[in-house]
Length: 176
Image (cartoon, rainbow, N blue to C red; front, top):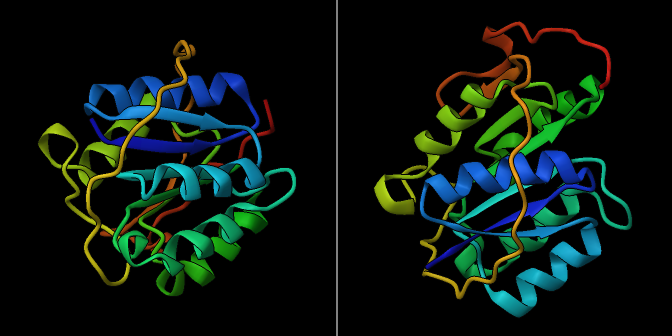
């Protein structure tokens, strides 16, 4: 079974992402900081999906994506970036094409919105349906770090591959 790399320091958020990727038949591997995410990429190989918070300790989400894209197998890995900070989401929109960011989500995106984005990026059984800029991604050996799902959240999808951020108004909410 292939894996999804989840980089988020918030245990509740990471647990929610883990539950969603399990539904798509991917094994979640959760890390709490950017350095651990890069180490996971080196040790475990290219994930079938990367979900990263942009504001991470040690290395930020953009640096993780850049490292992923440097690997030939990582060029087509779908990437979902998440942030509660509007400026960071705007920065992701600016870097989107260059880094091959598949979707940009507000931290308050609803569970259903997140599920729809993940399903859209992954075909049946965790096969890649939409991805980053260039080369194909072979299957990687997965590892598991289990976590429990959280309670439902408010809506907050900012942009996906088919819907640019400029065409959609993101809800403004205060941090949890």
